[in-house]
Amino acid sequence: MMNYNDLIFEISRPGRIGCSLPESDVPAVDVSKKLPAHLIRDEEPELPEVSELQLVRHYTALSNKNHGVDNGFYPLGSCTMKYNPKINEDVARLDGFSRIHPYQPASTVQGALGLLHELQEDLAVITGMDAVTLQPSAGAQGEWTGLMLVKAYLEQKGEKRTTVLVPDSAHGTNPASATVAGFRTVTVPSNEQGLVDVDELKKHVNEDTAALMLTNPNTLGLFEKDIVEIAKVIHEAGGLLYYDGANANAILGKTTPGKMGFDIVHLNLHKTFTTPHGGGGPGAGPVGVNKKLIPFLPVPRVVEKNDHYALNVDEPLSIGRVKGYYGNFGILVRAYTYIRTMGPDGLRQVSESAVLHANYLRKKLEPYFVSPYEQVSKHEFVLSGSKQKKLGVRTLDMAKRLLDFGYHPPTIYFPLNVEECLMIEPTETESKETLDAFADVMIQIAREVEENPDIVLNAPHTTVIGRLDEVKAARKPVVRYEKETIQT
Amino acid sequence: MKIRLTDAARQQLTGFTVPENRVLRIDADMKGGCGISVHLSVEAGEPRRHDTTLDCGGGIVFHIDRFTERYLDEGAEIDWTKENGFTIGSSFDSGCTV
Ligand SMILES: Cc1ncc(COP(=O)(O)O)c(C=O)c1O
Image (cartoon, rainbow over all chains, first blue to last red; front, top):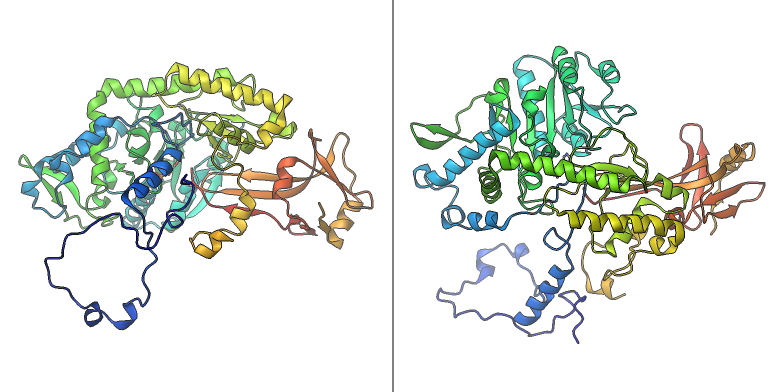
């Protein structure tokens, strides 16, 4: 029997073919006459040679090993792994959206431009901002775009401010984006309640403060209740307030970053608005801004003029393009479909259910794990594995054990300010039965830690590949397939 | 398992009194987010169930839990400097994402 764990190169046999091409109906060209000699390879490429059936079985087997929201619970905190409705796919595949070219004249793609325009407006309402760019293709790129807007705005005012403040619970992309945008980051410690300590913040705010980047609710799943005062402190010092919208699922239809006092917002459409999370893309991280920052937004944006949609390119203060064409168009179509499917009441219900689910699960698990904060959670919550650590078992071991039950583990060891952290985000799309079943497994694992720790320490037991050697993977990574490397 | 103590580290540890109900521990800590990093440290901590002990002579006995054992290289060197305190040669970072 064929071993489906083999690499495609290993099932390759010389001369085996999986496709048949028609006779060429154009004259053959001698490439050696067309290309410089150093660009022409002198050996055949080692492409795998397999039949169509082998190819199909190989990739089907690989896809079956993958874990996604379509085949199991995926409570990966901060990532909002909710179900992506299939209607999004139907709409994205309509010819009018999927078979058009970005350089077609605007008059021939009015429907597509109309969709982008409506999405810009919808996201502006949802965030309480005045205008939106759809170009950035991830949350992190949205952050960078936002910070480039801060820079352009300050430059225009003739101010040179160099620091961006970031709480210690922030996602790593916040300081990284600030650094790439040319700022210096200063970390603000959280208080015992897991929130921004306003007095501590005040110590760091001065005439050099360009912006504060804040996630609200923060990555601990806690709402920053002092947000109005925080905004005042930053604004009075002449800085701007940046909203990391990764956790927008908690506030949809309830409040807006605009109301909280933020000047710039990014949303992660692949989190909150049910578009696929690809490994590094395709994603979408639209950025909304309030009035004073509109002139600096990237071009082009879709504008409406005399009942006609057009692309504005003529914005002298714009920071320019941040992405080819107009953003990840197919992803934007999916997010638009979701917003239209749900409507304002539906979106409000999303955040209510997301918050309810997180608190339900938290209450079920609190007796078994350390729960470091008292405040009611929003759409996600953190637990600490510190009690289990004393028993010689770590959060990583428990995360591996969850794999045996077919669950994707929660986010672990993030945020950094919680010891042995487990960050759980169930999302609104899961049923009570799923939440109960997951809680039962977590409780079982907590019991195993006490009574039979070996089963946790050596997990996973039921996956195709058992416990990986992370040390070897980190120290001696093999990132390129070579027959010899794999065979020895 | 064997580890190596530099003279500076041995000197520091020889004069060190471990507080009551604590043990001398080599501990691996993980930090996550955009990538996982494992940080190894020397500390005086609570004993943990299933700890193994490593007697380095001269009254220096380290406790190590099973998790830390995975990350501690055979022959790892523990050093001590004024600037950095204790350092263990095996900490590492690896990429993966949240
Ligand atoms: C709080 C937070 N901010 C920013 C990001 C970065 O978003 P993206 O992965 O879309 O670049 C993430 C991603 O998980 C996040 O959780």
